[in-house]
Length: 318
Length: 277
Image 1 (cartoon, rainbow over the protein chains, first blue to last red):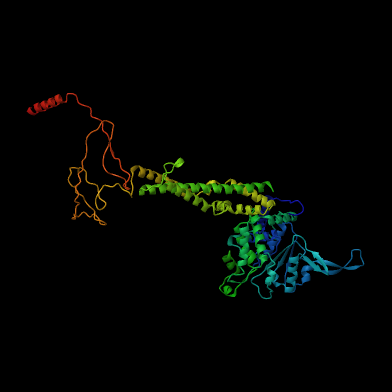
Image 2 (image 1 turned 30 degrees about the vertical axis):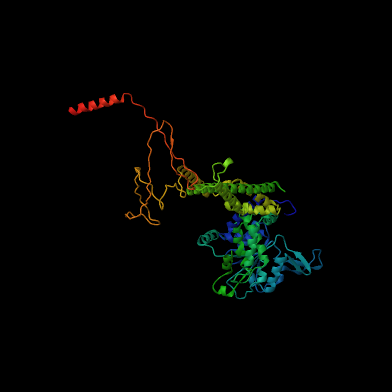
């Protein structure tokens, strides 16, 4: 637990999380599973990679999440000409406030926010990707010989467009492994799309207000509670065995690392807490298996030729 | 150690105890089944070992041994599986939470969520029933079988029905049917002999009759009122050693009729007058 007295008990935390989902649903129609998994990434203090075609509300989802949790939001639109300094910040010469003297002052880049949306990260050059992901991993930026910590809490939500492959730089597996979850954002159903049209075509510049449900301090407490959720020994072992089975599966060329075992257990705990339970069940592990593993394994060429995806293989293993 | 942790440890001990009690109950029921089943088998076969004395007087020793063996084996087999895990199998609604709580207690975990789990598990355990630990349907069937077999056993013992060691009717080359009633005038009874290993098919076959003439005398003499007569005879149990002491029921002496001769003459006179008319 944090050094200070916790502001939330378990029941309060679960009520707040339920309220957060309801507030997000006021702006985001459908996508319940994606919303839940983004919240889980937040509660596990992890970063998420969202993959989906343009126009599915990914940016709005992340922006809404930041509003509901009282977090500062910034967006980085990745392009091939984006430089690392454009993301991390740079030193510029400015006149001192006292006047007359010019000095270097570090201008923080958009990465200095609580929730950072890196749109189309696969369009950035490998050098810019590396700078961004290094900041994500270490939660600090070193520029001009000075190390500057990023704000806490810090979340990077990166998006990828699966259909535009020209002029893109796919993230290498070593980099994707740093993301806690990879979420697939799919098209809405007819009813959901009809609801979206009704909500957003009746007024110009309509912005649906959402309430702040969790403060930063409370979010930190909830993150502590997630780690406190107990897991039975056999369920923990089952999660580890599941990850290890990816290393021996016939349809997979490469399996997941121990980082995936840790990710699976902690996200299963968050899933349990988010769903009102105080213990991890087998269903929690099964629910988080695909988001945790799909970006950490590589499907064998023959299986891929047969049309099998990483999700298909993981479903068989579960 | 928190109070909740203490309560949970006590609950785990209670679960183990109740499972052991359930195992003993199942063992006792199966032992009763073995007892009556063995008793019935012994009664039907007409064999018996030494009768038991003491509290179990009246029971056969072999049946008691079988009951003890079956009961003990049942309890030992059931207790090979961990009692708490069997409780979890019988109560799936509480299984995962209980298992997680047990592991947390064993690891001395503490924290707000863990304490909440302990509280939830204790509440759920209070809603479970010890009856869930017993295979109720199977036990009900076994108890019913015990009642039925016990009744049958009693009937067999009272009726003296036995497959082996039938009463010896004397003579003959093979199993024979008893002589038809009314025979007893000293002539050689006509017997229907079944061929050894053959089937009686209704066809008259020629057999060689025995050449031994046996005279059977049936004594119909009435004895005093209320007393039976010990008959003679050479009958004995199959072992040929223990004699059978048959006895016939005694009859009450008929009440003597006063002036019997006078009443007979009067009756004849009345019948004669009626004839003339």
